[in-house]
Amino acid sequence: MSGDPHDTRSYDLREHIPDKFHLVDEDYGMRNRGENVKLVPKADIIDDHERKSAAWTPWTENFFAYSKLDPPCSAPLSSLQRIFVKDLKLGCDYRETVAVLRTVAPPRRLGEALQTVVEDEQGTCIYLRIYGPVVAAHIDRFLPEGSVVAVKAPWCLCNKKFGTAMVVHYLTDFFRLVQGEILYPTKWNLLVPSAALSASEWFKEEGNNAYKSQKYQIAVVRYTEALNFKPNEYLKIAIYSNRAQAHLASGAFEAAIADSTFVLSHEPQHEKALYRCAIGHYGMKNYATAIELLKSLIEAYPSNETAKNDLRRAMQRVQEQTTGAYDFADMLKVSRGPCPQMDVADYIGPVKQQADGFFATRDIPAGELLMCTKSF
Image 1 (cartoon, rainbow, N blue to C red):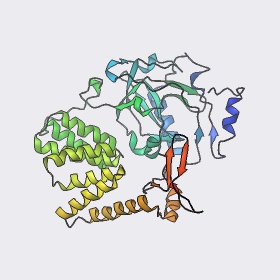
Image 2: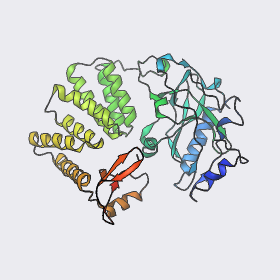
Image 3: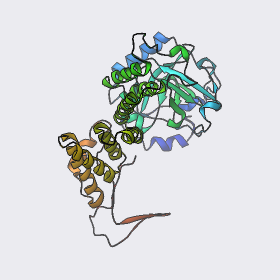
Image 4: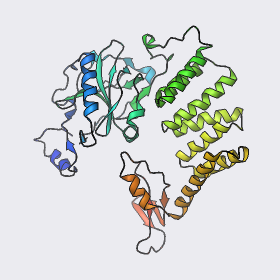
């Protein structure tokens, strides 16, 4: 959809925008399509980013933007050609290319998007803006400073209010890179100190430091790099266990299950792996599996009070899932916070879904709960 004020299709959208939001004319390079991306000195763009970050409040920069119409890029990374920021033009979709970038500033919220400053291998800087509910819920942790990423089919826009930015609408077009991978620039490699016991040990400690600083995605990358240096079996198990915890902290529950399952395949009674696998299944709403794992953990480690508390929590989710009995007052309280994360189970009552909608499976009295589920 065009952002042209003379296009009547845009007025239909404005009628449905809440008062606290304003519509930004992103226009996605339609008017200035084909123009070169305006290059801004690194010091200037970082200064602008920091100034706007300091001035941000929940009531500023809330906006709706028209969506990009092009589909995500389905080509594998290995088949794409490297492109640099100076070679990009506004509004052009470079389907056969990939941009490799490094974040040089902490991220900030821009409406429901994440925005940060990135540089390419040549040192050219540009804003990177990423959309998506997962991103919006984890702005401070999703893309910490120092991350190296690849953006497939890079696409840039420019508007008067927010300047020029490379925009990612589909997370499938976005990848974190690990040192040693083909696309990872060697000039950005971390150098292992000569005093380190081993490269794997050093990268593991770097991962631990990143985790303590709540840079969970950086921690995952460092643990992965530690594994790439072929550690011994004992160290490998420790790294997988730590990476599982970093995955949990960043909300990557399926990856946490995979890492903790690897540990359990070598040490079935590993306390931390049992717990992390259980919490991973809890996050995936596999409550029955989580309960089974937590019971095994408590049986092996009776003094683990955290596991006992989480077992009660998982059993409460099962009750919600089967009966539809919720603490709605508590849910309302949580919903009023910033980026609320509801810790409740889904409930489907006496209805079933068919091709043309939902249908009752029995007579339903007035006031009965039919369904309770989160939108994503």
